[in-house]
Image (cartoon, rainbow, N blue to C red; front, side, top):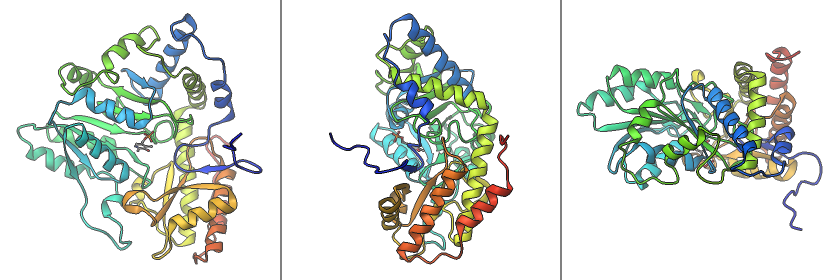
Length: 408
Ligand SMILES: *Cc1c(COP(=O)(O)O)cnc(C)c1O
Protein backbone atom coordinates (compact mmCIF):
# COMPACT_ATOMS: atom_id res chain seq x y z
CA UNK A 1 0.00 0.00 0.00
CA UNK A 2 1.19 3.53 -0.68
CA UNK A 3 1.79 5.27 2.63
CA UNK A 4 -0.49 8.28 2.36
CA UNK A 5 -0.38 8.79 6.09
CA UNK A 6 3.35 9.10 6.36
CA UNK A 7 3.54 10.35 9.93
CA UNK A 8 5.63 8.01 12.05
CA UNK A 9 4.20 8.82 15.44
CA UNK A 10 1.64 11.15 16.99
CA UNK A 11 -0.62 13.56 15.14
CA UNK A 12 0.47 15.66 12.22
CA UNK A 13 0.28 19.39 13.03
CA UNK A 14 -1.82 20.78 10.20
CA UNK A 15 -1.36 24.44 11.02
CA UNK A 16 -2.11 25.87 7.59
CA UNK A 17 -5.11 28.19 7.19
CA UNK A 18 -7.14 25.54 5.40
CA UNK A 19 -7.66 22.72 5.06
CA UNK A 20 -7.90 22.86 8.82
CA UNK A 21 -7.87 19.83 11.15
CA UNK A 22 -11.11 17.82 10.97
CA UNK A 23 -12.48 16.79 14.41
CA UNK A 24 -12.93 13.04 14.98
CA UNK A 25 -16.64 13.59 15.52
CA UNK A 26 -16.95 14.89 11.94
CA UNK A 27 -14.75 12.14 10.48
CA UNK A 28 -16.97 9.53 12.12
CA UNK A 29 -20.11 11.15 10.69
CA UNK A 30 -18.57 11.11 7.19
CA UNK A 31 -17.85 7.38 7.50
CA UNK A 32 -21.56 6.46 7.73
CA UNK A 33 -22.95 4.42 4.81
CA UNK A 34 -23.99 6.43 1.76
CA UNK A 35 -27.77 6.58 1.34
CA UNK A 36 -30.21 7.05 -1.53
CA UNK A 37 -30.06 10.72 -2.44
CA UNK A 38 -33.69 10.55 -3.63
CA UNK A 39 -34.97 8.69 -0.56
CA UNK A 40 -36.89 10.05 2.44
CA UNK A 41 -33.94 10.01 4.88
CA UNK A 42 -31.99 12.21 2.54
CA UNK A 43 -34.66 14.93 2.53
CA UNK A 44 -34.29 15.25 6.30
CA UNK A 45 -30.52 15.65 5.96
CA UNK A 46 -30.83 18.12 3.07
CA UNK A 47 -33.30 20.37 4.87
CA UNK A 48 -31.33 20.24 8.07
CA UNK A 49 -28.02 21.31 6.54
CA UNK A 50 -29.58 24.15 4.56
CA UNK A 51 -31.36 25.46 7.68
CA UNK A 52 -28.14 25.23 9.69
CA UNK A 53 -26.14 26.99 7.00
CA UNK A 54 -28.64 29.87 7.02
CA UNK A 55 -27.93 30.30 10.74
CA UNK A 56 -24.18 30.28 10.18
CA UNK A 57 -24.33 32.76 7.27
CA UNK A 58 -26.84 34.75 9.38
CA UNK A 59 -29.34 34.90 6.54
CA UNK A 60 -33.04 34.17 6.02
CA UNK A 61 -32.47 33.68 2.30
CA UNK A 62 -31.29 30.68 0.23
CA UNK A 63 -27.88 29.08 0.67
CA UNK A 64 -26.81 26.94 -2.30
CA UNK A 65 -24.42 24.00 -1.70
CA UNK A 66 -22.16 22.79 -4.51
CA UNK A 67 -20.02 19.64 -4.70
CA UNK A 68 -16.96 21.76 -5.52
CA UNK A 69 -14.04 23.53 -3.90
CA UNK A 70 -14.34 27.23 -3.08
CA UNK A 71 -13.15 28.14 -6.58
CA UNK A 72 -16.31 26.56 -8.00
CA UNK A 73 -18.47 28.69 -5.73
CA UNK A 74 -16.56 31.81 -6.90
CA UNK A 75 -17.46 30.91 -10.48
CA UNK A 76 -21.06 30.14 -9.50
CA UNK A 77 -21.41 33.56 -7.88
CA UNK A 78 -20.21 35.36 -11.02
CA UNK A 79 -22.02 33.34 -13.69
CA UNK A 80 -25.38 33.58 -11.95
CA UNK A 81 -25.59 37.38 -11.89
CA UNK A 82 -23.29 38.69 -14.63
CA UNK A 83 -23.59 39.20 -18.38
CA UNK A 84 -20.77 39.15 -20.94
CA UNK A 85 -18.61 42.29 -20.76
CA UNK A 86 -20.03 43.46 -17.43
CA UNK A 87 -17.80 45.78 -15.44
CA UNK A 88 -16.97 44.64 -11.87
CA UNK A 89 -15.05 46.55 -9.22
CA UNK A 90 -12.65 44.41 -7.19
CA UNK A 91 -10.07 45.30 -4.54
CA UNK A 92 -6.51 43.93 -4.39
CA UNK A 93 -6.19 42.64 -0.84
CA UNK A 94 -3.93 39.72 -1.72
CA UNK A 95 -3.55 36.50 -3.67
CA UNK A 96 -7.15 35.30 -3.43
CA UNK A 97 -8.58 38.66 -4.51
CA UNK A 98 -6.12 38.49 -7.45
CA UNK A 99 -7.28 34.99 -8.43
CA UNK A 100 -10.97 35.95 -8.29
CA UNK A 101 -10.16 38.93 -10.50
CA UNK A 102 -8.36 36.67 -13.01
CA UNK A 103 -11.36 34.35 -13.03
CA UNK A 104 -13.70 37.28 -13.76
CA UNK A 105 -11.54 38.16 -16.77
CA UNK A 106 -11.54 34.54 -18.02
CA UNK A 107 -15.33 34.50 -17.80
CA UNK A 108 -15.50 37.50 -20.15
CA UNK A 109 -16.10 40.20 -17.54
CA UNK A 110 -14.23 43.51 -17.25
CA UNK A 111 -12.78 43.62 -13.74
CA UNK A 112 -11.32 46.87 -12.48
CA UNK A 113 -8.81 46.14 -9.72
CA UNK A 114 -8.50 48.89 -7.11
CA UNK A 115 -5.28 48.84 -5.12
CA UNK A 116 -3.18 50.78 -2.63
CA UNK A 117 -0.13 51.73 -4.69
CA UNK A 118 3.47 51.11 -3.70
CA UNK A 119 5.46 49.13 -1.19
CA UNK A 120 6.30 49.91 2.44
CA UNK A 121 9.38 49.51 4.67
CA UNK A 122 9.17 45.70 4.40
CA UNK A 123 9.46 45.93 0.61
CA UNK A 124 6.05 44.25 0.32
CA UNK A 125 3.03 45.72 -1.52
CA UNK A 126 0.98 48.01 0.75
CA UNK A 127 -2.26 46.69 -0.64
CA UNK A 128 -1.36 43.21 0.66
CA UNK A 129 -0.95 44.51 4.23
CA UNK A 130 -4.26 46.36 4.58
CA UNK A 131 -7.94 45.56 4.16
CA UNK A 132 -10.37 46.93 1.62
CA UNK A 133 -10.41 50.76 1.57
CA UNK A 134 -14.12 51.52 1.52
CA UNK A 135 -13.51 55.23 0.77
CA UNK A 136 -11.74 54.34 -2.50
CA UNK A 137 -14.71 52.17 -3.46
CA UNK A 138 -17.10 55.00 -2.66
CA UNK A 139 -15.03 57.48 -4.71
CA UNK A 140 -14.95 55.17 -7.71
CA UNK A 141 -18.69 54.45 -7.53
CA UNK A 142 -19.49 58.17 -7.34
CA UNK A 143 -17.64 58.69 -10.63
CA UNK A 144 -19.69 55.94 -12.25
CA UNK A 145 -22.77 58.08 -12.87
CA UNK A 146 -24.03 55.80 -15.67
CA UNK A 147 -23.95 52.73 -13.38
CA UNK A 148 -21.63 50.85 -15.66
CA UNK A 149 -20.29 48.87 -12.66
CA UNK A 150 -22.53 45.87 -11.96
CA UNK A 151 -20.88 44.45 -8.84
CA UNK A 152 -18.35 45.19 -6.11
CA UNK A 153 -16.40 42.03 -5.22
CA UNK A 154 -14.27 41.82 -2.08
CA UNK A 155 -12.57 39.15 0.02
CA UNK A 156 -13.64 39.26 3.67
CA UNK A 157 -10.82 37.19 5.17
CA UNK A 158 -7.78 37.33 2.86
CA UNK A 159 -6.20 33.97 3.61
CA UNK A 160 -2.98 34.86 1.82
CA UNK A 161 -2.22 37.72 4.22
CA UNK A 162 -4.18 37.41 7.47
CA UNK A 163 -6.05 40.66 6.90
CA UNK A 164 -9.84 40.95 7.20
CA UNK A 165 -11.97 43.61 5.56
CA UNK A 166 -14.84 45.63 6.97
CA UNK A 167 -17.75 44.44 4.85
CA UNK A 168 -20.34 46.66 6.57
CA UNK A 169 -18.17 49.66 5.59
CA UNK A 170 -18.20 48.54 1.94
CA UNK A 171 -22.00 48.31 2.09
CA UNK A 172 -22.16 51.85 3.52
CA UNK A 173 -19.82 53.06 0.75
CA UNK A 174 -22.07 51.61 -1.96
CA UNK A 175 -25.16 53.14 -0.34
CA UNK A 176 -23.47 56.51 0.22
CA UNK A 177 -22.66 56.64 -3.49
CA UNK A 178 -26.29 55.76 -4.27
CA UNK A 179 -25.04 52.99 -6.54
CA UNK A 180 -27.09 49.90 -7.49
CA UNK A 181 -24.09 47.49 -7.86
CA UNK A 182 -24.38 44.11 -6.20
CA UNK A 183 -22.08 43.41 -3.24
CA UNK A 184 -20.33 40.04 -3.59
CA UNK A 185 -18.09 38.74 -0.83
CA UNK A 186 -15.69 35.80 -0.48
CA UNK A 187 -15.60 34.53 3.08
CA UNK A 188 -14.29 31.09 2.15
CA UNK A 189 -11.86 31.03 5.06
CA UNK A 190 -13.85 33.16 7.50
CA UNK A 191 -17.21 31.41 7.77
CA UNK A 192 -17.98 29.86 11.18
CA UNK A 193 -14.76 31.24 12.70
CA UNK A 194 -14.76 34.99 12.00
CA UNK A 195 -17.86 37.14 12.55
CA UNK A 196 -19.89 37.33 9.35
CA UNK A 197 -23.45 38.58 8.76
CA UNK A 198 -24.87 38.13 5.27
CA UNK A 199 -28.23 39.87 5.84
CA UNK A 200 -27.22 42.55 8.33
CA UNK A 201 -24.26 43.66 6.19
CA UNK A 202 -26.41 43.80 3.06
CA UNK A 203 -24.38 41.31 1.06
CA UNK A 204 -25.93 40.05 -2.19
CA UNK A 205 -23.82 36.96 -2.77
CA UNK A 206 -21.53 35.38 -0.18
CA UNK A 207 -19.11 32.68 -1.31
CA UNK A 208 -17.73 30.16 1.18
CA UNK A 209 -16.19 26.71 1.44
CA UNK A 210 -16.00 23.70 3.72
CA UNK A 211 -12.35 23.10 4.59
CA UNK A 212 -11.47 26.17 6.61
CA UNK A 213 -13.47 27.60 9.52
CA UNK A 214 -16.18 24.98 9.12
CA UNK A 215 -13.73 22.14 9.98
CA UNK A 216 -14.76 19.86 7.11
CA UNK A 217 -12.58 18.23 4.48
CA UNK A 218 -12.39 20.05 1.11
CA UNK A 219 -15.10 19.32 -1.44
CA UNK A 220 -18.23 21.37 -0.86
CA UNK A 221 -18.80 25.10 -1.16
CA UNK A 222 -21.58 27.63 -0.84
CA UNK A 223 -23.36 30.68 -2.23
CA UNK A 224 -25.65 32.64 0.10
CA UNK A 225 -27.95 34.68 -2.11
CA UNK A 226 -30.02 37.82 -1.46
CA UNK A 227 -33.46 38.43 -3.05
CA UNK A 228 -31.86 41.20 -5.18
CA UNK A 229 -29.24 38.77 -6.52
CA UNK A 230 -31.96 36.21 -7.29
CA UNK A 231 -33.82 38.87 -9.26
CA UNK A 232 -30.69 39.89 -11.21
CA UNK A 233 -29.97 36.20 -11.96
CA UNK A 234 -33.22 35.96 -13.94
CA UNK A 235 -31.89 38.21 -16.70
CA UNK A 236 -28.10 37.70 -16.39
CA UNK A 237 -26.66 36.30 -19.62
CA UNK A 238 -23.39 34.50 -18.84
CA UNK A 239 -23.95 30.80 -19.66
CA UNK A 240 -24.88 28.80 -16.54
CA UNK A 241 -26.13 25.26 -16.22
CA UNK A 242 -24.48 23.22 -13.45
CA UNK A 243 -24.04 26.37 -11.34
CA UNK A 244 -27.53 27.83 -11.92
CA UNK A 245 -29.20 28.71 -8.63
CA UNK A 246 -32.83 28.41 -9.76
CA UNK A 247 -33.06 24.62 -10.23
CA UNK A 248 -31.03 23.90 -7.11
CA UNK A 249 -33.07 26.23 -4.91
CA UNK A 250 -36.27 24.73 -6.26
CA UNK A 251 -35.18 21.13 -5.53
CA UNK A 252 -33.80 22.20 -2.14
CA UNK A 253 -37.36 23.07 -1.02
CA UNK A 254 -37.89 19.33 -0.64
CA UNK A 255 -34.38 18.68 0.72
CA UNK A 256 -32.98 17.34 -2.59
CA UNK A 257 -30.57 18.41 -5.35
CA UNK A 258 -30.97 18.21 -9.15
CA UNK A 259 -27.90 15.90 -9.28
CA UNK A 260 -26.12 13.56 -6.84
CA UNK A 261 -24.87 15.69 -3.94
CA UNK A 262 -21.80 14.82 -1.83
CA UNK A 263 -23.83 12.73 0.61
CA UNK A 264 -21.01 11.87 2.99
CA UNK A 265 -19.67 15.41 3.14
CA UNK A 266 -23.21 16.52 3.95
CA UNK A 267 -23.16 14.10 6.91
CA UNK A 268 -20.00 15.86 7.99
CA UNK A 269 -21.63 19.26 7.40
CA UNK A 270 -24.60 18.24 9.55
CA UNK A 271 -22.23 17.30 12.38
CA UNK A 272 -20.15 20.48 11.95
CA UNK A 273 -23.30 22.61 12.11
CA UNK A 274 -24.38 20.84 15.30
CA UNK A 275 -20.99 21.56 16.84
CA UNK A 276 -21.01 25.21 15.78
CA UNK A 277 -24.61 25.92 16.78
CA UNK A 278 -24.37 24.02 20.09
CA UNK A 279 -21.47 26.25 21.10
CA UNK A 280 -22.96 29.38 19.56
CA UNK A 281 -21.35 31.70 17.03
CA UNK A 282 -20.35 34.43 19.53
CA UNK A 283 -18.33 31.93 21.61
CA UNK A 284 -16.56 30.63 18.52
CA UNK A 285 -15.78 34.12 17.21
CA UNK A 286 -14.36 35.18 20.60
CA UNK A 287 -12.26 32.02 20.82
CA UNK A 288 -10.62 32.73 17.45
CA UNK A 289 -9.98 36.38 18.38
CA UNK A 290 -8.21 35.19 21.51
CA UNK A 291 -6.07 32.68 19.60
CA UNK A 292 -5.14 35.45 17.19
CA UNK A 293 -4.02 37.69 20.07
CA UNK A 294 -1.96 34.85 21.62
CA UNK A 295 -0.19 34.10 18.34
CA UNK A 296 0.48 37.80 17.71
CA UNK A 297 2.01 38.07 21.19
CA UNK A 298 4.52 35.42 20.05
CA UNK A 299 5.26 37.16 16.75
CA UNK A 300 5.79 40.45 18.56
CA UNK A 301 8.21 38.82 21.01
CA UNK A 302 10.17 37.41 18.07
CA UNK A 303 10.48 41.02 16.89
CA UNK A 304 8.97 40.21 13.48
CA UNK A 305 6.23 42.15 11.67
CA UNK A 306 2.88 40.53 10.99
CA UNK A 307 1.75 40.67 7.38
CA UNK A 308 -1.29 42.65 8.54
CA UNK A 309 -0.11 46.22 9.12
CA UNK A 310 -3.39 47.55 10.54
CA UNK A 311 -4.18 46.51 14.12
CA UNK A 312 -7.92 47.01 13.53
CA UNK A 313 -8.17 44.26 10.92
CA UNK A 314 -6.01 41.35 12.08
CA UNK A 315 -7.60 38.10 10.98
CA UNK A 316 -8.82 35.95 13.86
CA UNK A 317 -8.15 32.75 11.89
CA UNK A 318 -4.59 33.10 10.65
CA UNK A 319 -1.46 35.19 11.17
CA UNK A 320 1.08 36.00 8.47
CA UNK A 321 4.66 36.39 9.73
CA UNK A 322 7.21 38.30 7.64
CA UNK A 323 10.69 36.79 7.91
CA UNK A 324 13.76 39.07 8.10
CA UNK A 325 15.25 40.21 4.74
CA UNK A 326 17.41 37.42 3.34
CA UNK A 327 15.65 34.62 5.24
CA UNK A 328 13.81 32.33 2.82
CA UNK A 329 10.46 31.62 4.50
CA UNK A 330 9.92 28.56 2.31
CA UNK A 331 13.21 26.96 3.35
CA UNK A 332 12.27 27.61 6.97
CA UNK A 333 8.86 25.99 6.47
CA UNK A 334 10.46 22.95 4.83
CA UNK A 335 12.86 22.53 7.71
CA UNK A 336 10.06 22.78 10.28
CA UNK A 337 7.97 20.27 8.36
CA UNK A 338 10.86 17.83 8.04
CA UNK A 339 11.95 18.02 11.65
CA UNK A 340 8.68 18.44 13.53
CA UNK A 341 5.89 17.21 11.24
CA UNK A 342 4.32 20.68 11.37
CA UNK A 343 2.77 22.23 8.24
CA UNK A 344 2.68 26.02 7.92
CA UNK A 345 1.14 28.08 5.11
CA UNK A 346 3.42 29.39 2.35
CA UNK A 347 3.73 32.98 1.18
CA UNK A 348 1.53 33.14 -1.93
CA UNK A 349 1.93 35.23 -5.08
CA UNK A 350 3.75 38.49 -4.37
CA UNK A 351 4.67 37.24 -0.86
CA UNK A 352 6.45 34.08 -1.99
CA UNK A 353 9.44 33.27 0.22
CA UNK A 354 8.95 36.43 2.31
CA UNK A 355 6.44 35.21 4.87
CA UNK A 356 4.70 32.16 6.29
CA UNK A 357 1.19 31.75 7.68
CA UNK A 358 0.04 30.18 10.93
CA UNK A 359 -3.53 28.88 10.85
CA UNK A 360 -5.52 29.13 14.07
CA UNK A 361 -8.94 28.11 12.83
CA UNK A 362 -11.35 25.30 13.37
CA UNK A 363 -10.41 22.44 15.65
CA UNK A 364 -7.47 23.80 17.74
CA UNK A 365 -6.89 24.65 21.36
CA UNK A 366 -4.32 26.59 23.35
CA UNK A 367 -1.94 23.65 23.51
CA UNK A 368 -2.04 22.81 19.79
CA UNK A 369 -1.19 26.45 19.16
CA UNK A 370 1.57 26.40 21.79
CA UNK A 371 3.01 23.31 20.08
CA UNK A 372 2.92 25.01 16.70
CA UNK A 373 4.67 28.11 18.08
CA UNK A 374 7.27 25.87 19.72
CA UNK A 375 7.92 24.10 16.41
CA UNK A 376 8.38 27.46 14.70
CA UNK A 377 10.72 28.76 17.39
CA UNK A 378 12.83 25.59 17.22
CA UNK A 379 12.88 26.01 13.42
CA UNK A 380 14.19 29.58 13.77
CA UNK A 381 16.98 28.32 16.06
CA UNK A 382 17.95 25.47 13.72
CA UNK A 383 17.94 27.77 10.69
CA UNK A 384 20.10 30.30 12.53
CA UNK A 385 17.46 33.00 12.23
CA UNK A 386 17.98 35.46 15.05
CA UNK A 387 14.73 36.38 16.75
CA UNK A 388 14.50 39.02 19.46
CA UNK A 389 13.05 36.87 22.22
CA UNK A 390 10.88 33.92 23.01
CA UNK A 391 7.49 33.95 21.35
CA UNK A 392 6.62 30.74 23.12
CA UNK A 393 7.01 32.41 26.53
CA UNK A 394 4.95 35.40 25.43
CA UNK A 395 2.10 33.24 24.08
CA UNK A 396 2.21 31.04 27.17
CA UNK A 397 1.83 34.10 29.39
CA UNK A 398 -1.05 35.41 27.28
CA UNK A 399 -2.98 32.13 27.23
CA UNK A 400 -2.40 31.50 30.95
CA UNK A 401 -3.50 34.99 31.97
CA UNK A 402 -6.47 35.28 29.62
CA UNK A 403 -9.05 32.57 30.20
CA UNK A 404 -11.10 31.47 27.21
CA UNK A 405 -14.68 32.77 27.15
CA UNK A 406 -15.97 29.20 27.32
CA UNK A 407 -13.48 27.99 29.99
CA UNK A 408 -15.34 26.06 32.68
C1 LIG B 1 -9.13 28.74 0.08
C2 LIG B 1 -9.64 30.01 -0.50
C3 LIG B 1 -10.10 30.09 -1.81
C4 LIG B 1 -10.04 28.94 -2.77
O1 LIG B 1 -10.82 27.86 -2.36
P1 LIG B 1 -10.53 26.38 -2.90
O2 LIG B 1 -11.38 25.55 -1.99
O3 LIG B 1 -9.06 26.16 -2.75
O4 LIG B 1 -10.97 26.35 -4.31
C5 LIG B 1 -10.59 31.30 -2.26
N1 LIG B 1 -10.63 32.38 -1.46
C6 LIG B 1 -10.18 32.35 -0.20
C7 LIG B 1 -10.23 33.58 0.64
C8 LIG B 1 -9.67 31.16 0.32
O5 LIG B 1 -9.22 31.12 1.59
